[in-house]
Image (cartoon, helix red, strand yellow):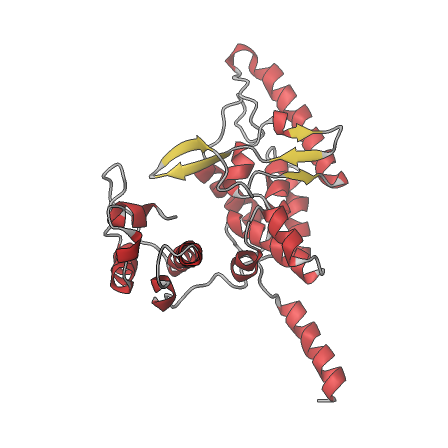
Length: 290
């Protein structure tokens, strides 16, 4: 997310970064004028991605300002790009149930349960069976598989907060055990062609799937389930939103999603849904008599 900024202004002392620098960067990102590290033409960034980058930059400069490294946070002066459709891109409980019901017959059923459980796409793709402890009923995020300039990289999680151990729900335990049996059957069928990489999300001969391929499969699944199209990453937003609407404390949601800053969780990952807003209107009406 911050690589274009680093490539463009990496040699510039942070104290010399100006609002004009960031404005110019936003313009170039939207136009696709910042080449990839491998020299290929870059894609044009959508409003959602630009605004998320700006949010992260604000947080970085806030920390630098608190340490006395910079005098002011120039990123706060930069206008957000209109047309950001981040809010509302979440499923309601009934939609989640439809997707999971459709996923029951899918060989990647476990991936479609892990995403709305709050894991990033890279975390889902990076999980290995050694990260699953059925005895303790836990899942541990230790690494991630992400796409950088079109290439897949195995790397450390985004932050220390992202390295986390989460309790497994009884339903997810059942799903993971089914997946383990399914993969064992595929290994037996493939014989010597099977490559035992240990990844949960893999093809029929054990090779880890490209994260973009997983996203494409998600789109196919949700279309077949007859629900609105949202990105695979929005399933993670759904987790945060549903927890929030059920009254789970913000700090707990942040820890579950792997965020060090609970404020970032609320600004970026937790959205109101129409039913919740309608319920709020009913409560207001009962109080005010309107």
